[in-house]
Length: 318
Image (cartoon, rainbow, N blue to C red; front, side):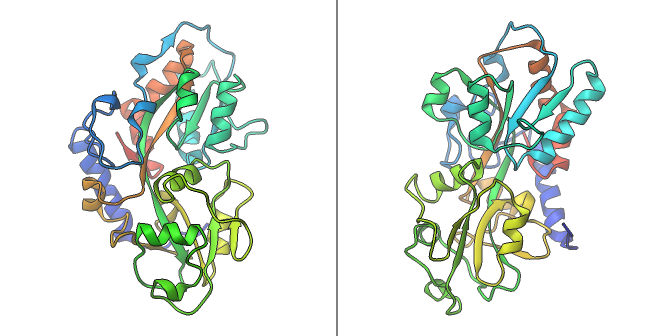
């Protein structure tokens, strides 16, 4: 998809990455000071659930190496996973990797975790926190990067303001249905929700809707059938609203990012302080018992080279 010349936003993200590296891995999307063992950290952003993430030291490395490292999961993480696959294969050419079941197309975080539990895959690329049942089944999520969600509208949408978290909640629950109710033009709001398989949807529902239900489809509310981003951006038009990762929104010619609570996710100080309210950790999830090859892949993602790829894929490194 064509990119705009919005150099200031791209530069800002680059400065954020530089600050993350210079700051010794300070957790920019919360105030937890222990990334490797989040249980000891103090969070101010509810999007990161410390009890569900693990460090690589928690994993039992006693299984034999597989012929193929199979993966499924987050569509948001496609670019990053592909870059990690290529770079990992250069260092470990004897064990190939795949991403997506069955045909190379990833199926979203929720399905990725299900496939991990059922042993269809060895790694799930995951953009949401694990729930208690998944943790009890021995799933461990290793943080490899950070990300935030952006609220997006079409570039020609007349609305120029900010939305509060309460307004976002009401929009996605069908209580606010016209842009005039939030200071915009007298135009019905076309609400586009991410697919049910999406970890991005799970995060949005947890943080914005406080785990309450979305509005039902119909009357200008659409739940997208597949976990994908570009078709949603193209569908926004002059009246639509949706959400995606900041990395997928910055530089897009056909969308604008709407501030939340008066704060834009491209505001570096806001992300550093955690005052931007919709953010998350992204992880590689595995079963409690893995092979040395699987651990090597995760170790590579956490290595200096892997964290460089995190940056080039548009995420914030640890």
